[in-house]
Figure 1 (cartoon, rainbow, N blue to C red):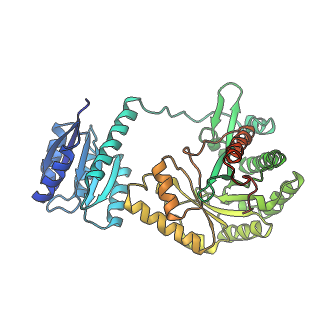
Figure 2: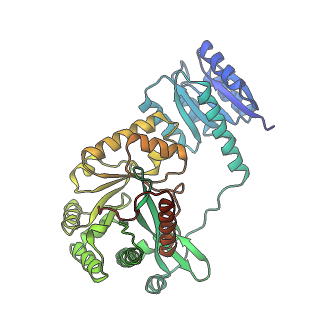
Figure 3: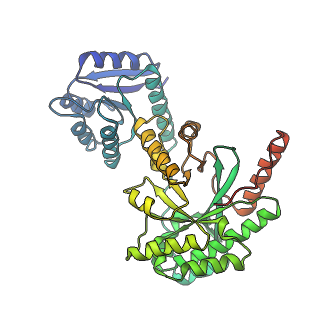
Length: 412
């Protein structure tokens, strides 16, 4: 059996012993303790701990300073924060640790239970298994000039794949997000991160937006022929709203392809901004006036503006995966999610959580009242024909169960 070495840093003797007893009761766990942060730093230099469980509020060197010191170590143990500090303080401590390159498995409010401890150790074991499997290979950006990119767009090498959005009420796939893929003739299918920087550098974002819109409306037509009405969301960099005729052009493309504006939603991405705020609000208003849906993308990432969410005519808010990942075990994240869901509900918005990867996250989002989810737990992005097959399988399953007809969904 693999032995996991755990160090507990807690200045109060009773709490230190209490935690040590609970961790020692888990098979395969070897526990050391310290009541002093400076001593704990020295222990980490001598012993390659797998997990350090640290308090925050301590005399002398506090938990924040202790975590900062760990970042300089060659061997960086994973962390769990256990404290009676406020949830917002613990959330800030987590963000600080992660920004230093440390892995935080969880933040827990005192008093913790044996179930909390076994959950942490299971997360530790999974992290060790993932580490043993080797790091994920990060592919470098592709190299391509403007003419090659235009050729790839014109030849439909660069095209739209679709990631399902599932309703937490009905359990059905009720919408999709169009994600860009390049079916490269030599390198195979490439994800967006490998070539979107090139698209941006060569000023081809508008051309790509038009292309993805056409592909999306065409996919909707094929699905409609099979009996499914599926709204699609498409990413739109806000700086393109500086083109004042963009809403008119997008509507013209939609109608020329036989589509309906109400079945399309443009997600305004937080990674891009307009030079003039008036263009942003004018473009947002005109897209809504044309009948398109409008979503605030990546809400919860970075410094998303509640003011912007309240004052832009959005129909949907997309909760970023930064708030979703770990929400089942992190009270601070759950509270943040609950706040976003409550605000979205009061504003009458469709609330979509992205990046859902575990059943526990799904259950948490359902309990909080989120409307829809997308993520690897549901499905990765797939080509239009594969998406149609997914809808057919879902319909067959519901027919066998004697449930209602899936696929006839309300517009945004």
